[in-house]
Amino acid sequence: MQQLNQATASPHAAARPKASDFIIRPVGPVMGAEVIGLDASQPLSQDMFKRIEDAFLEYKLLCFRDQEFTLDTLVSFTENWGPLLEHTMPGQLRDGITAINIATNATADGKPSGKHPDVTAMRWHTDRSWRARPAMATLLYGVQVPSVGGDTLFANGTLAYDSLPEDKKRLIDPLNAIHSVDYSRKTGYGGPAATEYELREHPPVPHPLARKHPATGRRSIYCGCHAWKIEGWSKANGRKLLDEMMDWVKQDRFVYRHKWRKHDLVIWDNRCLFHAATPYDTTKEIRTMWRTVVEGGPTH
Image (cartoon, rainbow, N blue to C red; front, side, top):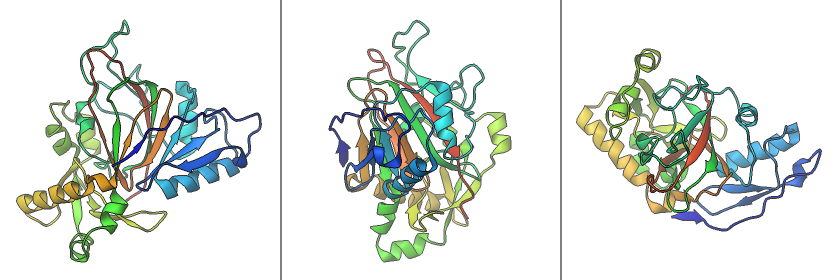
């Protein structure tokens, strides 16, 4: 399993920064790169964003260290990537603002609550795959992070697909998996049920099990905990195949563990990556994360 441990100084860029003023450094063979020397809270030139966007497609996950965001500047940076999706999951909205999800175990007086803010996130998934137009990218900003635990695991669905036996590729290439918010919430470790709004706006939807990336053309395994069944198969056989695919994807050789530092901003490509939260001591430590999600396009 790839793991990023090194601490890297990340000085803020000078006034009127250029694309050459920051460094993009790979962190390992599975995925991911650090962006060093860029203040992502400031407006970006076209050249700067093009360089970041190219790195995003190449490395699939970027970590911007030592960032200082407000809610507004995080939204502004996210808008570089596309339209923001609303957050609809019960209990995760703040002040009616749907563009940013604030996930924290802190109480109103700033003490640990002892409760994880989203136990459903501990399952392997790709964000919003229960939508007809699933999430393209997710951005997560570490406002407060625990000293131990609370890492995020990421699995590379492209590497996992490339490593499949050829007969397994031929099996899954023409198949669709049906993704369902209702199914996902009902199997979500005791999390909240889907709301009437979610059920009405997002009925079960098919997506390719071997999804082609719209920018790179490469196939990735695409399922996760939101995937309910295989279109045209019995539920039992479909469930068996979906579980087999996820067991394959989450092998250590396809996984990167992100150990959070305060004020990390991580953006990842939901079109080809899975992720899962890991536990931490919610009775002693506080973990507060701001999250924005970028809308993607159709998968067929």
